[in-house]
Amino acid sequence: MQTKPWRIGTRGSALALAQAYETRLRLMKATGAPESAFEIAVIKTSGDRILDRPLSEVGGKGLFTKEIEEALLDGSIDLAVHSSKDMPTVLPDGLAITAFLPREDVRDAFVSEKAASLADLPAGARVGTSSLRRRAMVKRLRPDLEVVEFRGNVQTRLSKLRDGVADATLLACAGLRRLGLAHLAEKAIPVEDFLPAVGQGAICIESRAGDAAVDALVAHLHDAQTGTALVAERAFLAVLDGSCRTPIGGLARIEGDRLRFDGLILKTDGSEWHVVRREGPAADAAAIGAEAGRILKEAGGPDFFSAPH
Image (cartoon, rainbow, N blue to C red; front, side, top):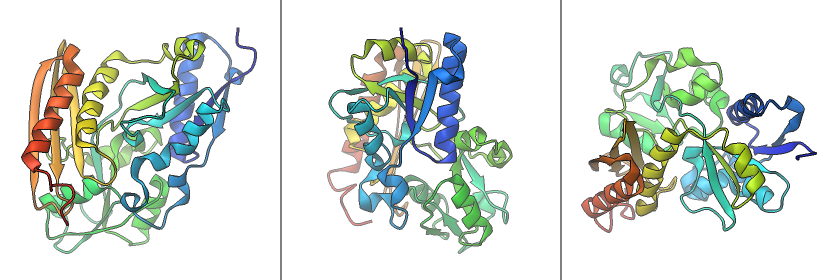
């Protein structure tokens, strides 16, 4: 029997804490344990400290997980709560993703006080984003717009928008909803126009591989459909060696026992892109995602991600 609180590791941003609190609440409901049985441990990551440079220049996705994973490995925490889109495809030895919470809205939201949509922005307007995927997709749809670097948490980016650093920005609907800002997610962009990042909208739990007690605990949280979709998306990303350095979109959707996967790679300036769609049995999620990745890798050619953009 667990005699001390389970320690849940998380980043300290408002969104990361909202995700950790949601995880704790779900665990309380599933186990009947009181709030005191679960302790939230805030861990500052490299990605939270380095705010003056694009992620693509300083190390990509692992910047948001490194210190938290070190705490898992040294036993300081029992489980970690992450945004799935922040997770590298290769995890440190001894760690595993052991559960996915039910997925939220996967779409990106257009946020602006000056226009109702991306199409309504005047030529030369500035769109702020730190995401290479969003940058490339904006330039693909509107090459006449200027895209400016926009680092920081959701609140910081909304503040920059109010201060006129940019005329518009793009934020994940899921994050806005989890922060109680659903009204800002009303201008959601259809996935057909703006394919989300792999894992967008999904919270995942990472823990030590083979830790039977934690495995039994987080089994209460796992949403099988989200897990299957993420198997396909992460297999796709792994083939493409995806990180924050490459503009990639990918989304798996499940209907019954079937899975449909859509994938996209782009040049950073939006001047070239390749798309793929694959369908098959949901049981073959990993194979479907990997095949889609191989198709796009071949379509782009060996220099697609390395050539100057």
